[in-house]
Image (cartoon, rainbow, N blue to C red; front, side, top):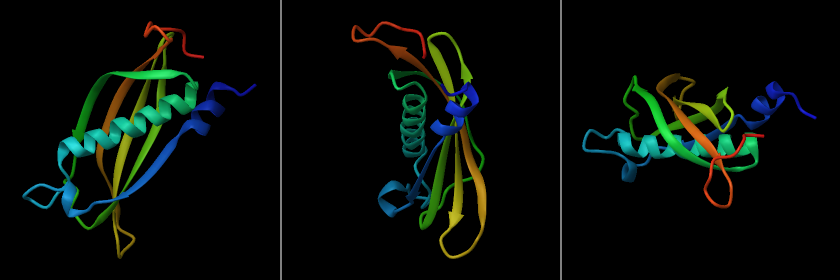
Length: 128
């Protein structure tokens, strides 16, 4: 049986996306709402990979937009479980910007999402 630390490491999720014009605003930077959607998706995948249970988002805790994400860049979203409760867990998602044609990389956005494990009746159950 895996330790909690092994489960957290095994469930850490990395997703890469290219920032195309159809996801950007009139400043040619990624829409904040689109970034939040990407983050919630990665957080959901991370929570599900950790628990292997039905999970639902119950809150997005603080989301810090530190730097705009320009079109024509690559972003990496990294989700990692940061807290385990009885029926809930938290996942931190960081978005890093990578220039396409250089080794430049920096953190742009950080956020935390809370998930609850549910049963077939949508009632909270213990996170396994």
